[in-house]
Length: 238
Image 1 (cartoon, one colour):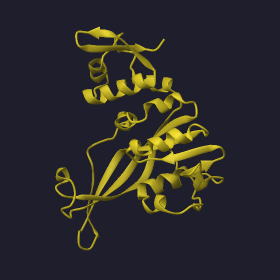
Image 2 (cartoon, one colour):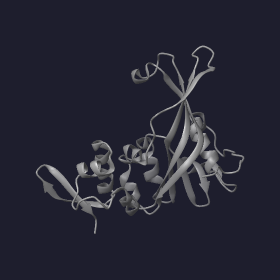
Image 3 (tube, helix red, strand yellow):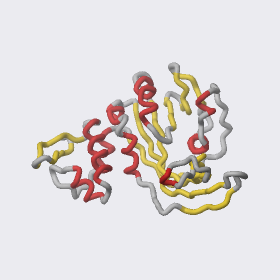
Image 4 (cartoon, helix red, strand yellow):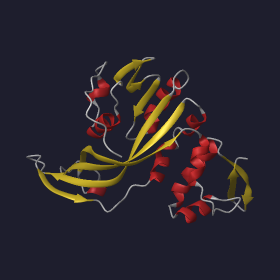
């Protein structure tokens, strides 16, 4: 996907939204913007990232739970699209803790996959039942800026993540209804199927497969079809 031509982004409302906006969020807004868009617009007591005609566009780089109530209220009266980036490729940039100058840059061996969507989608799966709601997943290339200041996670040996920057958008997928998610169920799945079947067929962790099944069940795209011992079995909704 090519980046949109540069557009001047002028906020109609200022405040905590902009103050807390990270570089990745701002980069996606700039990438997605079109000439007639409005930015940081107050709608029904909420501030919306982008308003495009009647469509409200919200960007969320993580934690769907924090915007669940906002989305549930807005979708009652407005069509709304949620944009969610998944880092397909990540560059890790380390800064000197004293000078904040770059001391290294390396490519992470991990590649983000679209299945990562479900670790957040489990917080709002029923929204996909509402025809006013849609979700767009962006696969992106990012820089993750870290500082070895001793204040970060032990998994990163004390390095803090201080920012993330958008480098490019390498792909996207739009979901407008529950049926769009049935593409995550391969034709080679048995009928009925279990979370273990899905895990083995897609070569993904079992807990990821369980999240996919939970979301599809909540959005009524699949139904439980009995058990095999203690294992729950499912089929696509007729």
